[in-house]
Amino acid sequence: MANFWSNSPGPMEALSQRDHLYSLYKDPNWMLQAGLGDIEFEQDMYDDFMYGKPALPRMGAPSYVYDALSSFPDDPYDKLAMEGLRQHSKEGIYRYLDRSPYDVGSLETYDPGREESYKGVYNIWNKPEERDKYPTFMDFNLPALISDWNKKTYRGKQGNLQNQISDNTRHEYKHAFLNKKEEPYHHPAIFGSGATYNLDPVSTAESFDRFLRPQETYEKGNINSPWNTVQYNPHKAGELAQETVQKFARPPKGAAGFNRGGIASLR
Image 1: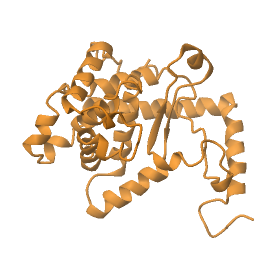
Image 2 (image 1 turned 30 degrees about the vertical axis):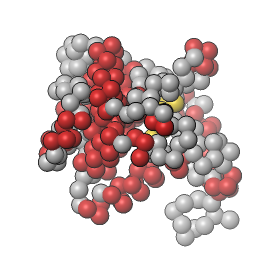
Image 3 (image 1 turned 120 degrees about the vertical axis):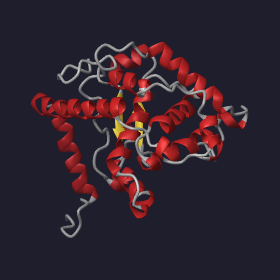
Image 4 (image 1 turned 120 degrees about the horizontal axis):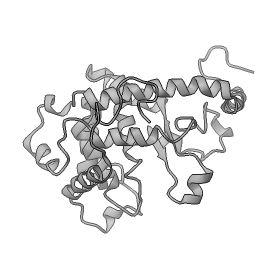
């Protein structure tokens, strides 16, 4: 029986809702409407990456913060995020669709327990045969994002949820190019770039902390962490970010390589 006194459906009801949504994924008319929403979202991200004002200069950061980030690109806009957006916008109609919608509790069979551990994830397939078979997609854990905002931001009356979602999206787009697990600096490069360009002060500080101390933050307790055997050097993360921008970011035409305003402006 459904719990009519709760906004959250029970596991069986949620499972039914998930099956219904899966059927809509196969409906071309529904997918067209969802795709128009994707384009609007990408246009918002374009505006944030191109015109958004980074939080870091307004945060009164001490000199050691700028020293640690001195190897990162200092372009007037976030070129790495912009190129990641350009790349991801070509990944097809399933590029933002949730693979496990609705909380089905103990009935979960799709990688159970994993979704609670992240706020966003970028699934990319590096082998050609995998890329032909499976779509590359980005997934957000909005309950985790909102919970994090409630704990760290709303109480302190600083930052805003919209900018934190934007900053998490910025992070995930960069995985379009920085995703190889054999490169230990790919995540520090993204976190350091986020500390440089993020719009929200809370996510900026969090990104900087993870960039500066990976072995004590997101890699803590990981017995397979590369930092168990490699001496971490934050400037190597900045150098990787620079190399990636130089390799992939295309020279601007109009505004940062995009034709401003049209539906096909991200293509």
